[in-house]
Amino acid sequence: MSLTYALITGIVAIGLIIVLIARFNINSLLVLFGVAIALLLAAGDTPAQAVASFQHGAGNALGSIGFLLAFGTMFGKLIAQSGAADTVALSVMARCGAHNLHWAMAGIGMIVGLPIFFDVGFILLAPLAFIAAQESRKPVLFAILPLMASLSIAHAVMPPHPAIMQAIGIYHANLLENIALGLLIMVPTAIISGPLFTQFIMRHIGPIDTSPMEAEFLSRTALSIRPSLGRSLLCILLPFLLIGCGQMLTNLSTQGWLHMLGQFLGETNVSLIISLMVTVLLLCLPNGMTTRQITHALHTCLAPTGFVILLVGAGGGFGQAVIDSGISRTLTTAALSAHVPPLLLAYLSAVIVRLATGSATVATGTAANLLAPAMAEMHGVSPELLVLATGAGSIAFGPVNDPVFWQLKEYLGLSLSQTFIVWSGTETLISVIILLFTLGLSIL
Image 1 (cartoon, rainbow, N blue to C red):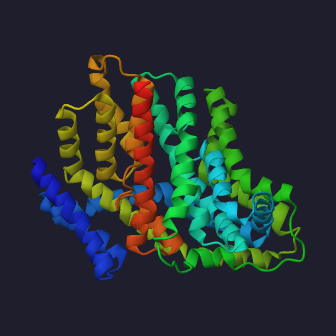
Image 2 (image 1 turned 135 degrees about the vertical axis):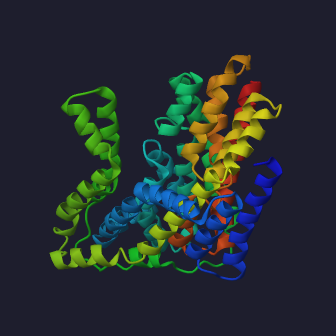
């Protein structure tokens, strides 16, 4: 596939998605499937090959996030229904004030985002953000956007996230130096792209209707007994604690029962199931919820997630279509053949893979592997800064083949144009800020 043909087909495919959904209001699932199939047919695949490619990408996306969405929604519903989210939200409001909600959520996102994947952190903390926004009488974006930005920054530049750890290994960078540099960049980037950008965007985004997901979390029964702050925090943080404990045990022991226990606890779905059971025992039953009420809450909360899960799968299917069509390989090869400075080359390579695959994790690992053979010729370039530049490029643009794009759209009830502003705009801003800080550090 020629570079010109790859650019044209990629631009036309994305343009079709935007026009068909935003202008003609065609169902997103149908559009993503149809455009993906058309893209693969244009690349020379047979209809059977095109459908198989889409199914493969959709299956991978659903396999990694489908049950996470379901279990995370069930956990969030119990946290909301038991009154734990109200307790924590009111505590945050009492300490920070309603006008500082966006700063508080940015801080929570940075702390939780250090050991936790973006997907997990967002799904588990979204109910808290919904309720905190309601209690403070602020728009939901006032709480969600700073949280989302902090989680994304941590995913892009901070160990021990797998993609960053992989890049550190490939570039032979120093882990402690990358942690220090990542923290140095993370805080100011979170301030700019979180609270400050939130204040700016709230004046331009327009009204946002309550989404089915938000309504589900906010529809909670009034309880006579509100749980204590200690119990509430324990249950809300339990999935993160279990995952972090699992990662620590896995790193401490390479074999034996400790290693197996670490793998068990570090598996996200397992940690969520354990957290669900603990929440029932520590919050729901002591606060007067009957088993019938608990079962009903767990059953009804899944209704709004059905379309979200399917849409996430369709986003993964479209991303696979872009890869299998050859667009990803053509654009990446063109970037590597260009004569640009090493840090910019690392950034642009990750950007191209991000646009082609939709995955920040894949973008970081792929770009690092592409650049690794050329490192011997990159004299005077810090491998730690190469890690940061690659991580910055891996989250650029928040494209439509990123399943999180569609997840966020449905979670918040955004229009397509609003999703581009909120998600794609925030991701691009974060990406550029991290790149500028990285280039500044290279000069120093």
